[in-house]
Length: 555
Image (tube, rainbow, N blue to C red; front, side, top):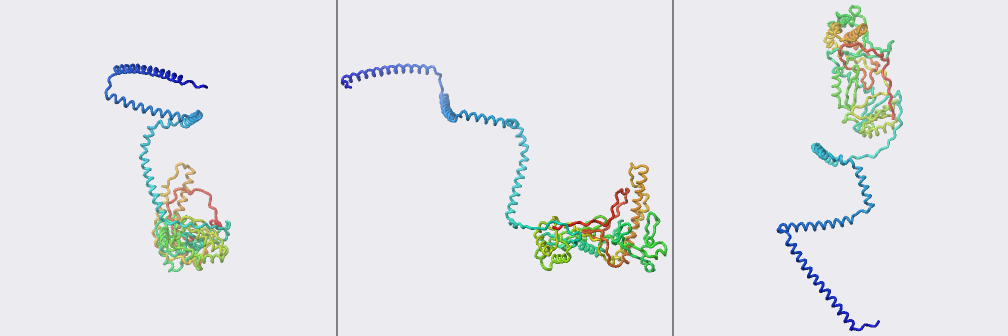
């Protein structure tokens, strides 16, 4: 394209400048007019505004500043809300979660509605809380003390477990003899054969008869009878008998102590002397031979207890006597911690345990039974290893407590040898002379008051006619038997020294009390009061010689 001439260009710029000048002028004119209007308006506003004090002005400034600050906070909040606005899916999930929370906690309002009541109860429980806190504090202190003591105590050595194989349990031979051994305090205690031990107890009591015999004046049975192994026609054991004859004048003078003792019975209320009761009224009767039962006198219960208490602690065992029916003495054994055999001692060549095993090995029917306390299982294993090596059958029983369990012999003996010649006739005679004159008057008094005492017995009111008659007759029979028994008991006391003076030799005496009861020894039983009612009718006891053979288990 051809360039325009320069003259045209200059003319165009002049026109542009004129136009701009006109525009600027018009704008200035508008600005001046606006300024005049604004000034007039401001002047009018200022004239119409109420007067404001300096304090009001400051308050307005403070309010303005707070408003601006709040405006900024609102803008920030708006921006934060816009930034964290949930998407529709998220909002729906939040709504579902809120609905679930409200359903699961719909009873929350009810539980918290009684807040004041709960606060009151809380105040009431504050003392209990303080007490529990105090107890907890004390318990924590005790626990800390125990932990400190435990930390100071050396750790106990835990030995490795030992596997033991024992034979299958099986009943022992019914004809076997049993020897007992106890393991306690990590020691071994030899008990031995039950009968041998109880016979030893019997002999010890017999040796101390003078200091142990009952010498009181109370009514009761002061003697008991020694029996043979033979039975009469009614299958009852026959007592040992001794023949006594007082023919010489010297013998009659020796028995003169019986003549002043007058004894009454219900059939002979006027009474007779004890001499006449035993030897008869006529001279012929008195010179004839008398067959007297051999008896032993009973011991004092309290003296027996004191005797064993004083003897306890001196040997391997402490002895505790207890008393069963008819004055039978039962002995309990308690191992003495200061005695017994250690493992080194009982395995030595001449120990009591080795001797016991040797004795058992002679008779293959002998078995060993071990009582094992929980603190001495290793001791038992050492002893059991040795007895097994000697081919001795054995069993064992776990045992807790202090007193050894009852000694049960596997084979019951029918009789035990006894030296009848060793009965202390001199002591028997002294006791008869001392006690008889004091006891006889008490029995005579009961004979004299028999009818009065019987009438004083209260009879059941519901009994009438034949029932009442039968009841009264049976009651009278029972009381007659009881009163007449006084005569028999006193007569036996006087006969005992006579029979003891004549009996001779060592005899097999019937065993009525088996271990752990001491045979051939009894304590005195008081007579008690006369029966106040007839004896209840029941099935008679079956006749027999005693208990059956118990069975011991070998394992």
